[in-house]
Image (cartoon, rainbow, N blue to C red; front, side, top):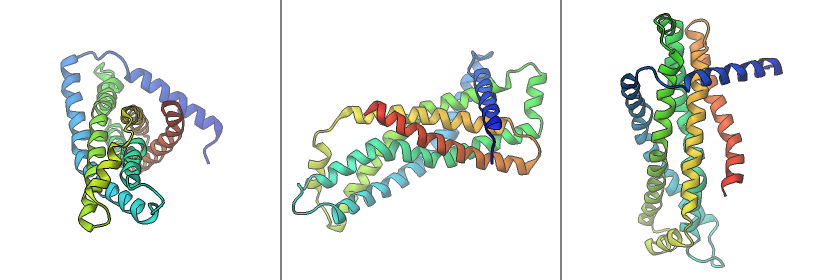
Length: 248
């Protein structure tokens, strides 16, 4: 078990590291190049898994609501309406970011952890480079930039998945259209975008801290990668409660 002292010490080290990372880059040309690279590696390479998972989850949500919740006492638009609200408010932002925390978070932690144990970060410091700013800031801004796009793709993939269930005959396109259009609140979409940007910050900064502060060998890198995923997921769940209460 981690003691309170160790937790507070870790929090202080995290804040100091992020404060060091979030500063004006020394070389803008190098920063922009790294920024685009991180957007591609962290965001673009995640589009496939986002589309696949969102498509099938949207289809499953639609089927579960139609088969287990909707009845003759409810209007026919309940299936489409509920599927839309779940995708907008929770799945495409919170649950999808939990999934990406496993993919992106472990990637960041293992990359920085490997650089730490192979003394590449020490070499940057010797050359007078702000290693935290050079390595972490592009990752943070890159994922925060691309995450709203991933959320948008997730929402549309989930809706397409719901429409795909019409091929099974459990619902109709007309029923889904009525539900998807019923009392649509555009703010719910922007709530998901805001939450996703916050989660992107948590994933990148926590994972970067875990990898950047590795001490030891390859075993510690693996532990840091696991710790990054678990810690990021916990903080996403905690922040989801407060953000949902504030935004909706």
